[in-house]
Image 1 (cartoon, rainbow, N blue to C red):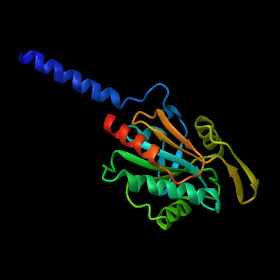
Image 2 (tube, helix red, strand yellow; image 1 turned 135 degrees about the horizontal axis):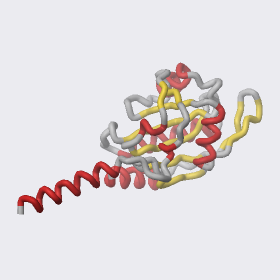
Image 3 (cartoon, rainbow, N blue to C red; image 1 turned 90 degrees about the vertical axis):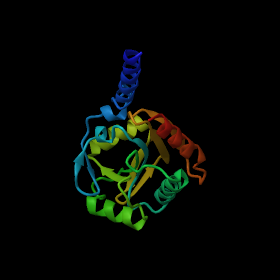
Image 4 (cartoon, one colour; image 1 turned 120 degrees about the horizontal axis):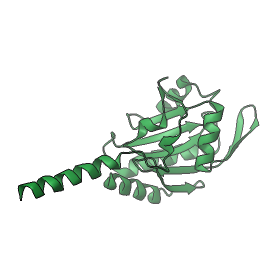
Length: 187
């Protein structure tokens, strides 16, 4: 009986460990380098083990990005009480030349995005394009200070697998919140 209990406990532990292994179809497998709002270098694999909600924006945008940012804020508020160590709310710049760590940090501060759960990333042009293509986000620079871009919020499991996307700008974040809660329950 004792051996059976240890065997069951061992299976349970192994299942938990495999939950944080990077999945085969995971964005965490992308080998690109990123810089966060604090100027620290990182890879997407550093997000392994966390449920990730992500939108691609740029800080000087005056139209769609403020709405996407507001939706990200609404998502966090609608989650209610959650462990900030298990969730990352990530903004990824489509204008890495202009969006310096200082600008990204100021953007987070202006939008009251406090806490370790908030992350703003920028990569080089190639990494940004690669990641946008993986997410089916289209963007194009239409003037020296303006971009045309898709408005997509994506949710990833703690293993980096895309589980949900919402395209368009509207204030209904319920589907995203439901998906994040589902992912948190499964992690």
